[in-house]
Image 1 (tube, helix red, strand yellow):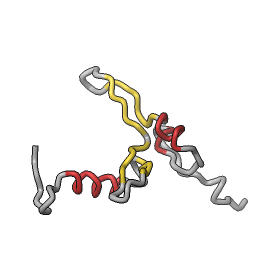
Image 2: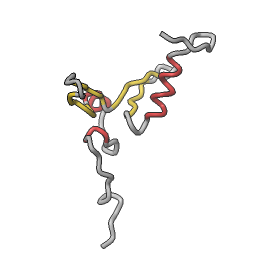
Image 3: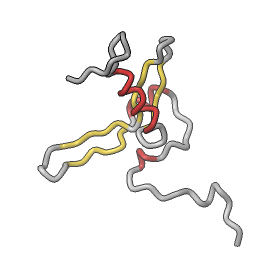
Image 4: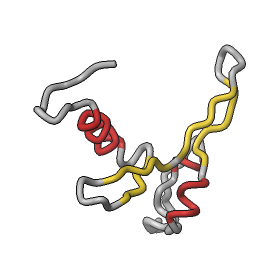
Amino acid sequence: MANTAKDEQEPVLNPGDRADCPMSDQEKSEQIAVDAPDITGDQIVVPTYFEAEEPDGEHKQLHHIKDADEISDTIRQMRMDEDGNRTWR
């Protein structure tokens, strides 16, 4: 029996980890990857998509797993001042 790519989807622990279904930006902004208590009992909510603004003003929805490198790059850019020096708070 031959399996197709559609039949063989990688299992995911959290449904919010899946990034293969088309959604509007509004649907992406409402999707939650994790909503569970941590070891201390505090409720942790992690969005599936993070919105980032490009230098040209374009807004992008970045998936917390698929686009993790780009999210890290965006955070690094936010920590740079106008002279290109890193600033730490």
